[in-house]
Amino acid sequence: MKKGTVGVLSIVAGIAAGAGVIGKMAGNRLNKAEKMSEKHLALFLMMNQWVKVKQEGVSLASYFEKNGYKRIAIYGMSYAGETLVDELRGSGVEIAYSVDKRADSLCADWDIVSADDELEEVDAVIVTAITFFDEIEEKLSEKVECPIISLEDILYEV
Image 1: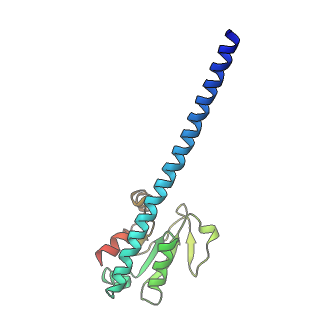
Image 2: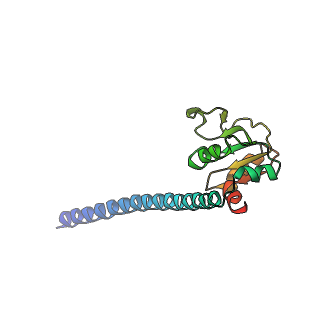
Image 3: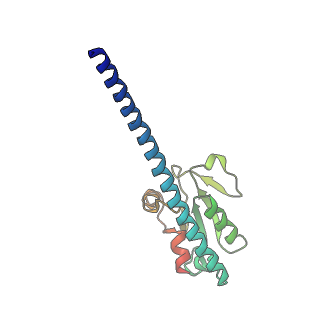
């Protein structure tokens, strides 16, 4: 009788432990999906604001020129970073370099460096990453003396 009870208890304990592990894994996946969803919503809203700015006939180059930023660096070369490059092409604003964690695998007509590299002084660094601005700003401010500005802030200011 005791062997049967111990066996049943062992099975129940195994099922409970397995359910707990699976529940934790599902919770982790859900948290990750929720964070990605929030990030992409924020990116969508920023890009939507950019469209509104363009519909009003405003170029971001005018923001840089008004503030005396002739030579900039761009932090983040994903969708927003690439769009910023396209927006500034042919303007009086020079992109000195870009900073991206995928620096080794990206190609451009200018240098793309890692945030761990030595950063050359520019008039401003524009952060296109939609999340973690405070952490990025803190890290960059240890390496450059210029303003570090969120692209999102620029889009709502112009």
